[in-house]
Length: 225
Image 1: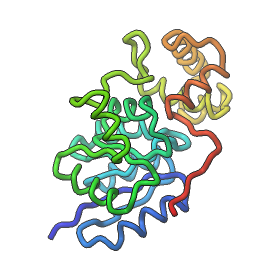
Image 2: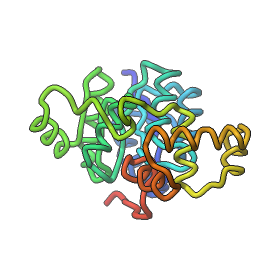
Image 3: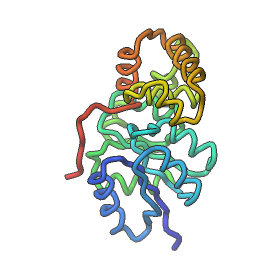
Image 4: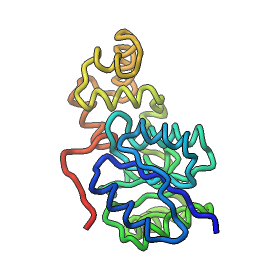
């Protein structure tokens, strides 16, 4: 029997280890690799070509939303299950907009995590039970079409998402330029475009937006019991 290969992308080591131990006891699931940030997740996905990626929504360097877009662009057959400590509608909508076919809360039971992996591998969607009930009540057909990453019909580009995250993480223009291998003037242009598209005109506002959209997390850490 061919096992379902899974890539774990989660920046908190204790959470990642918990998921790995949870999955290792399953006969039909194999942990192919582990990533501690979004960029590493994209690189490992391209290398390992996993069937399923368990992707944390908020990770350093590159968040799970943008990492999902990049993984699916390179590997359209791979299925992405988004992980989060938060179940707000905006988080779920943004995850599905990015291409994720499921959304799991980090406190989801081991049984449901494994069931989710098997379901998405079959081509189905899967949401944590509490989220699924809410989505069915709000809209039986879809988890939503519009997320916080769209403003007046204008969506953020991949590069703008990367710049937004680094701004929200406190990086200066010079540091962002070095991190992304682009010029400082290009960073400034991206910053201007972000503020125009989002109608936000200061760094503090961009940071609040990034937190509300699930692009970065607060300092609260969640562990698996």
